[in-house]
Image (cartoon, rainbow, N blue to C red; front, side, top):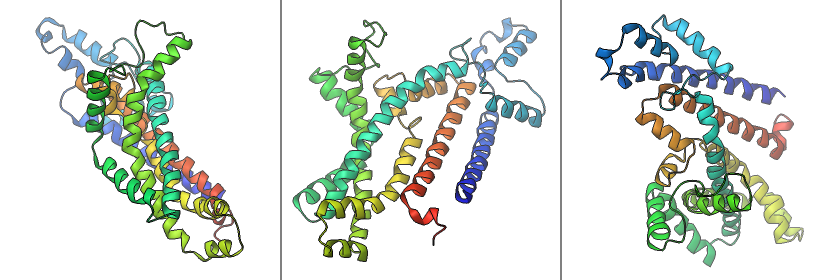
Length: 327
């Protein structure tokens, strides 16, 4: 319990620091979106009307301390303000429509890449120097070094434009009724193949190499030698003795990858015009929609800290030393 409370306190402080930076950054930039939107019409607008618009979007002059207290209150009440680009919709509603698509897209790709990379990494370490290790390990390193934008554009050109096997954009066909019937679900899965596949390809190398290196470091330990000497099956030695301990650093890598699930798909979503948070953030930046950008960054912060806290809890479950205070 002491370990859990210490980690929770740490993440709470980290969240407050991140929220403060999120508050300060837009205010450090020159101007505000309302002034930009109505710059051309400034001469035709009454000053009172312009001030009313600024108040609507939360850009009211006043002491920085008062603005910060109002911002903190809005964070904990989840009142993120009105979106400039999607006026008069609320930021929470705009992000709420997009978050499901991003969770599906990047969450699916991360789970696929983690599962495949970890399993292959385990056997690559056990049979190190073999054919599988000699081929897959260097190949995944090369794939990991390729920027996501290159992988996405190659997939889009090859499978979408040249071969015309897969749709090149959006989350599902607009001709299909969005009722989550079989045709709708089938269209969603078909449209997700390329973005999910490209994200999984980019991520799988890191998980594979991490697990392989962890396993190799553990295979020389005395308890592994003892398990082999006792005549235990290779399967039991690999998974019960080796992989369970080797997976601990990989859990941290997984939590970091899932933490970036909200914002890490920006390039992929823009290329495939996928209506997730990445595309929403990109459009918000172009429109200088500060309330939307702030809300997006806040969600990214909460997601990152939450998954790291979850990883710490998994450490307690996987490592008995944490439950016994290291005794």
